[in-house]
Length: 151
Image 1 (tube, helix red, strand yellow):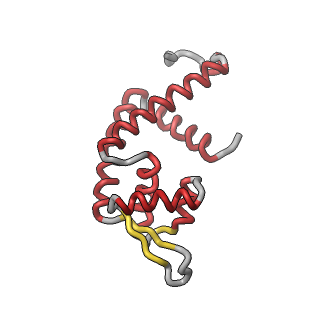
Image 2: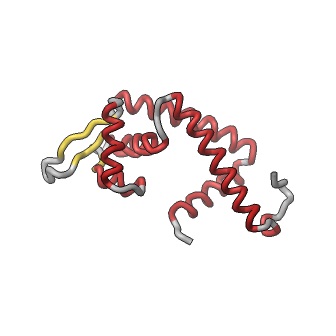
Image 3: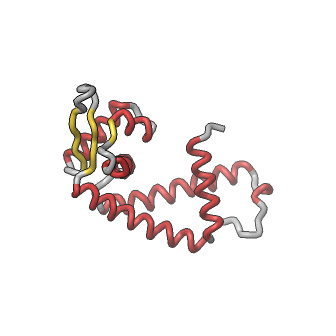
């Protein structure tokens, strides 16, 4: 464990890699343990949250879901089917382009996504309090940079 007075620039590169690996593994296990209670996989939860965020404006196309989740359209379609089988989302054919489908969250899906998000937020609040708000916020900015910018 790194102490607060440790200068990050003195860490050996392997140690930085090890820390990133452990942090990722631990956060994945924490998220999966929460999602398991709701019978959702991580990709299903990501898609459900994304769909819910667009539902108020009429829904989101499967191609846009694929782009946002950085998956191919075939995988996104299968993901949507799984969520439909669980009655968490619904889709309809777009009249303007009959090849496209617009996906919205169902009431059941919204309730489930809200419950999962609330539990995840509670867990993140505990972590944020433990490490300090500014430190945690900086970590999230770093994660965003690593996720969206190829270095």
